[in-house]
Image (tube, rainbow, N blue to C red; front, side, top):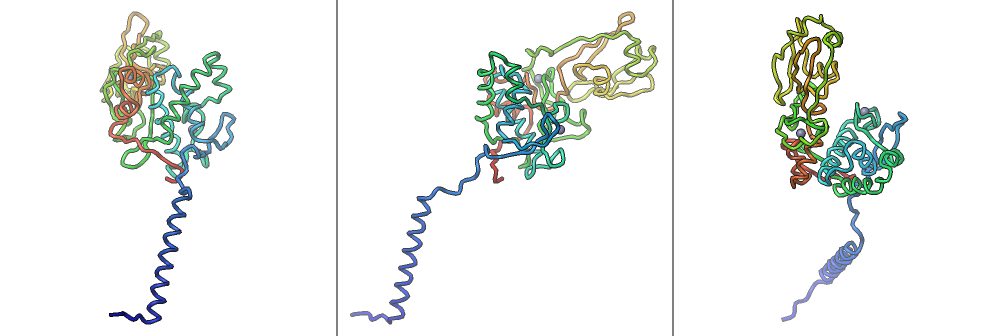
Length: 318
Ligand SMILES: [Zn+2]
Ligand SMILES: [Zn+2]
């Protein structure tokens, strides 16, 4: 039996066939074309405040090389340098639209280590490293490019990534330093930073000088006492006469290496002993190097000091 098709139906079939062929050809051609890929992290440009105090557009990864070189000894282990690179990159992007609010008007960060992060350009590194320049630059560059685009997140958001030279055995809760708690900046034990040159230190003052620096009568210095200690085993509050000082304030008034201090008065002198160097919150840099020497990876190091955070790779399209 022959089926006779209405001419309109034949036309419809021909149209559908032509359309299918067209779609097939289009799909085939699209496969031949390169995909409109995500921009690699190397193409992220950020605005910073340079050493001259001017706004400057810089390529992210190149800038991070200069930050890591300025913030951590280049002789440190590759995994420690990689951990520092991720911490530094996270700090910059957390203050860079669209990932976070800029810290300096239109600019993400500045190059002042006391405010944002230190940064050294190639000329500064050449004069600092001398004959070791090529070797050290290659180490830092590898740490940055091996972790290109990697940042630390807490519940999907970029985190604050403070770091210090050596925590002295235990890191500190953020709230004791800055009055604000962060769930990932909590005290952890650190048995890895004992090799730090300033792991422990002594400093002495004549009692009269200590009294002047603390702005109290000299006789009260003999009766000062710690009211409490922090989660990071630092002096929380110190009573001197009627004054109550946060341990962090005593540290800055007396120029001590850390707020993990004790003291002894002998004659007219007061001797302070300190553990660690810096505020102690977040990554312990010498601890990171110690962990790397013990065989831990940068992911292990970051997970230890920034509790509960996750590494994510960011792209220009994020
Ligand atoms: Zn700044
Ligand atoms: Zn430490």
